[in-house]
Length: 467
Image (cartoon, rainbow, N blue to C red):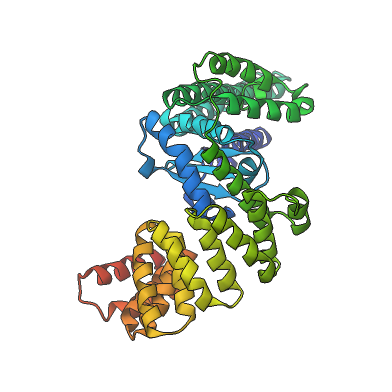
């Protein structure tokens, strides 16, 4: 905050300064979605799922490449939130609400929104917005000082209205600063729209989905924006924005291109999975009645049954899905999860092994297989579990459960030092500094000084000890 010590000023402008601080806070809140600190992201209700994350990668990779960005350096996160929204944050991170995924009629709708957010990343909007906010804050500071000078100077000259004049200068400066930053934000949004169409054209995709989504949002917010001052909006007025975007989208040679049937099916399966896990059971059965024998409907009903403990009703549906679409690894993953969470770990191993064989790069599925293997408490299965966890760690190094299960496997094999180190890793990732430091200190004694394990334990100690 630029005014950390307003109370140090001796002349009577404390009230005006408090209002200036409030304005700066408002500006910060306005841009919170773009200036989110890493710690805040950790507190978001994030969803982890191999199938959904794989589909999002399929949506984003061509767009990222078209924007000149390395897909491997951008992290996409899914937030459990029913509203239609997506945003970017510092550190090249993209956040997508489950509401957007559930309510998007087609993959093209989601891809269009992701293309828009990519425009923010490629345009360096996060950094530039921070610079613009700093400029706005400096302008507000100057206005405050000029206002204070007017108040003091007018008072010394015996002017009765000096206080009102000075406060007017302060408030006027604050208003201009606020409008300038909001105008800049609107310009960035319009720029991201244009960039999105460019990336969609480069990947031979239509912008129709993005346009359709904007129309939907416009209709939902029409009443609330009718009387709003356009100069205090963070985005362009919805109708103006749609009209400008519509011209660009309709001029594209790919305007009428539709999503491939295979991609559309994956999109519907993803929505069915989210509906099955997130929506009330009655709502799931209403949306996907028993008369609907499509794969998405079977998927949603199987998940809903599994959620309420009806494993006998869930398994036949999952087996039907496996027969309908044999190459899909996620049906086998669901079968393994359903069996495992209903106390049938030994039966869960086979479908999970099949899923891993079909999708060996998925750390999340390997983690689930390792959990099932450890649950049977046999040496051979423990050894197999550890192999899977070591591979899962490559893609999921920050997943606390990977380290926790590795600690369990090492402990069963009598490797206490490594068990302690993995316990320390898991505790550190969960934010438990006390346990992390204790286990890291104990583990470090068993490793040679300078070895990779010793260095990792030392890193944990350095990160967890309060300076």
